[in-house]
Image (cartoon, rainbow, N blue to C red; front, side, top):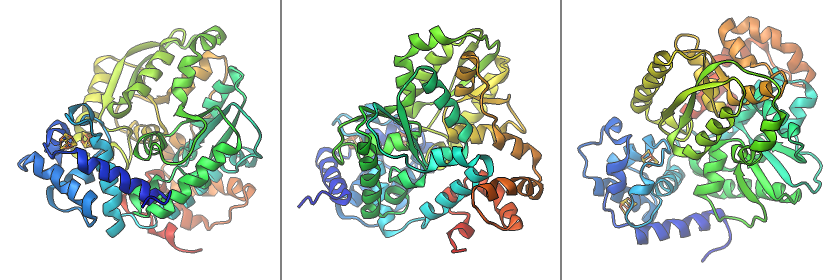
Length: 434
Ligand code: SF4
Ligand code: SF4
């Protein structure tokens, strides 16, 4: 009997999928991670059947079905393949959540992630900026809420650049984000705590509603996938939930009229097939930047970089990343353009040893508007490589933000925090009380 909880919503969604799916295996055949997950020899219908079994009666995923779900990077290639109109990506996400109820590889992920985010943001931001990203403002009626999610707060310069652009087109908006306004994906999919995840999602949807917005513009692709697809339809919402890049495309003409400055560079855009429309939005926005020469789009698999996206299938990722760097070299570009925070952090780390410098798309928009993009402190930190010196330099910023930590403790954790290792089961130290 539905009781309005996320658990019951997901159970009803799973039941619909189990009734519609014929276990034909077409989604498995279309899936690019299958050869990399060591399950090419498995019968596709049986792999899909293993997933259905978990949706039907719970329990832990096993065998080829477990390998498939574990490596699913959210690329969406399976969606058009289904002859029954089922969304197999949704089926796999629901099975991952269901299976995590009996066993999670990343228990306490939310706690670790929230602490890492707060520490990293406090190292980089002045108190007023930190409060803008992490503390919900007093509710007022606004047409737009800019929802920055949790993990993007680690790379705050991207978010402030995006706000510079929203300010330029005179949007009346408020900002919501940080772990206190999580979309719920961590509890639901990673920790297998659907009830807790439902409460988190409910709380965040209510927070949006407090501002009576017409539109909530999200930044984070994981929030977009979770709220916009996996649990789409859960909770009452009187507003549209969409990605900020689509909103900027709608205001393209206005933006074009505001551009004052040439940005004479040749660039390659990095985008993901799992949310191709967002990559296309960014390509369009960059196409308007005066002087900018876009040599092409390097499409990679998954819906984002990072632990919830392309990293889940390391073999496929290595192949696609190699192709991206080869394309950058062949086209002789000055920079690789990142889209999301997860991509930016990972590509910037890679740029230390290979590939061109990495610049986020928001930098180009700010520059074209005649502004100065926010500095990418993380990239500079990685280049410095001396974690203790870096931590010592950050202590005054931490103190200004009221964060008291031992600098040696922080220096030891910093490499893993920068690489978001909690998504691979690491950073246990952040789960311990201090
Ligand atoms: S979303 Fe992509 S990786 Fe996941 S099952 Fe579908 S095709 Fe495979
Ligand atoms: S989700 Fe669709 S494509 Fe996949 S096994 Fe079921 S019916 Fe076939």
